[in-house]
Image (cartoon, rainbow, N blue to C red; front, side, top):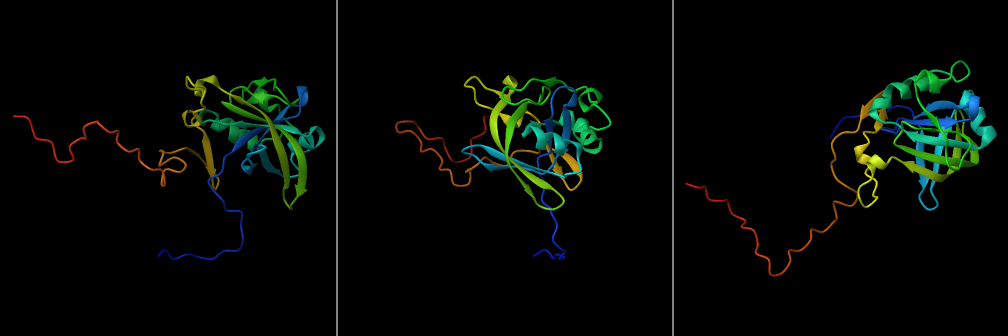
Length: 206
């Protein structure tokens, strides 16, 4: 068994999904990188983000009650990091990172067109927790790139090349180990009347 050290409590959870959060509108539109984002309910769909009250985007979201979660890909890694350390008070992040602020369908703030999936959100509660305030929001619309859809319209998010964040570092998603429920899924029984494949070793041709 691995020997471990005991530390005081810490928010050491990883990996987590870093997201580009767009907020504000018009000339006041801004981007903030948030690593503390998550799903809190599926029906109806609800998400959460945690932001320090000192951040420029905090006031924009508090005032409008709206934001968009833009899922970033590996090609957006530089923008994700840059938008997390620069302040919208000093620079237009969309222009600086050459990102396109496209109109959303249900909220006033823009979406990031370069992101393959955008979740449009409306805040329904804000909970002060300490260093961060927790924004709870309803997902009112989703925009998904057609490039990630198959012929039946099913979304294949694994094709997007999304980012992960763990302990101060960004990572691309690794190889697939399984799918939800694969450990208990029963293998389909062979159809009757069909010959079974031989289980023994094949004979070599001479």
